[in-house]
Amino acid sequence: MESVLILLPLVMAALALIVPSNYWRPWLLPFTALIHTGATLAVILHPEWGSQTVWLKLDPVGTIILLTVSVLYLFSAFYAVGYLHFRRERPNRIFCASLLAFLGLVSLAIWAHHLGLMWVAIEGTTLVTAPLIYFNHTPRSIEATWKYLVVGSVGIALALLGTFFLAYAAMQGGFTASLNFMDLLKQAPGLSKIWFRAAFILMLVGYGTKMGLAPMHTWKPDAYGEASGVVGGIFAGGITSGAFLALLRIYQIGNAAGESQFMAGLLIFMGLFSMAVAGIFMISQRDIKRMLAYSSVEHMGILALGLGLGGPALFGTLLHVINNAMTKGLLFLSAGNIHRAYASKSTDQVRGALRRLPLSGALFLAGFLAITGSPPFAPFISEFSILNSAFSLEHFWAGGLFLGFLFLVFIGMGITVLKVVQGRVPEDVEESPYKDSFLTAAPILAFMAIVLGLGLYIPDFLQSLLRAAVSFLENQG
Image 1: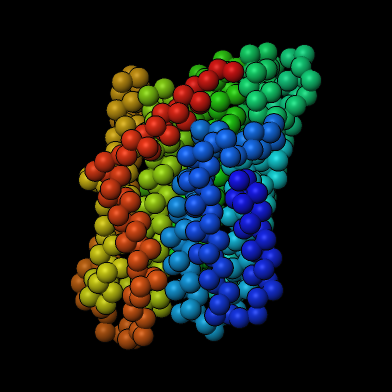
Image 2 (image 1 turned 120 degrees about the vertical axis):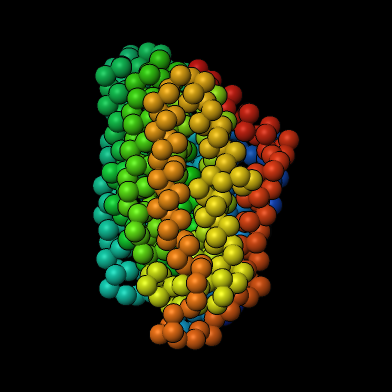
């Protein structure tokens, strides 16, 4: 089954480079996505169908990330068809091939139980997604692409160095050097403490750069701001989830090594700092896509905070991976529609979206309420779970700051969103031929249904997956 999940998207990416039709080529995206989602559900329901080798294995934590990325990609792929049909003046050969290659490489990163192979796959996602930022071929987009490549490459290089340090920590503990995840988990109690701590710091900074944790987030506002809405959604919910999985791997090894307290301090600090930075930069933000980039920084901070708290917060943290990805899909796709209807993403021109684009404007407003933790939407459930865990674990200062930063983000983001959706369309803004279509609206409605549905009820099937993942994370080898 892993061959379908990993190799099929890569084969389809090669096919996308060959298919001559600019009109029919985008349909490879939903075709591949449907098979990928079907195979994902099949391997979840029948684990024995998946590989159980020492290099490739789908464990309970990987299952959560795989399901999240696959569903996010499925709806985004259908949206991409509508988007690319509207942008017929722009060749989409590289765009389609890059999106398909991303799916294959992120699937490889999720299945990889060898930290070196996982690193290669995550670095691969950096390389194949860079052309997506440059799709519009503007000076700002090329600048954002280079910033993404340079900052991301530095971060991933530090992650590689941390991976080597982890292997050296095993050697210093008297073990045979190995980058196999299960081997390191078994050897964890005997790892060299000093070398493990150095490895964790490097991997936190390295993979934290890929996630967009502050202060390593500097690539995000430019990349998200210049990329199309569908690419922003894939970045904010897909690439970040893959990088967070890498962080979960080293976290689990650290727990088994008895380094929970050391890791917790760094993770909680990085989480709260990211939330603070995001809240500050959201105030008076006029670019709606850059605003969503800072929202992504905030929610990566929430994930880091939840992981640092550990214990009862882990369930809410893993649930928040899903909730964040689905809500970001909702927000970025609706923001993309608004951008096209106004030919601008600045609040100087984008006003009265509820009048010009009623459906996308309403969904964008609902997405804002969801992502800021308002009930009855799904992020409220996961954020409340993390907050409740902070107080139950007597991290009162962390819980208090968490609440304060959530309020700051709500105010900062709300000012921008209300400017976008309320009022009248400015008189100097030209009429746009763009209107919501089935392919550009139905995927957003699907994300909205998931975000609202998970806020009202978490299915037993999903609860079982989350509990299994938490139990796996707490495994001490």
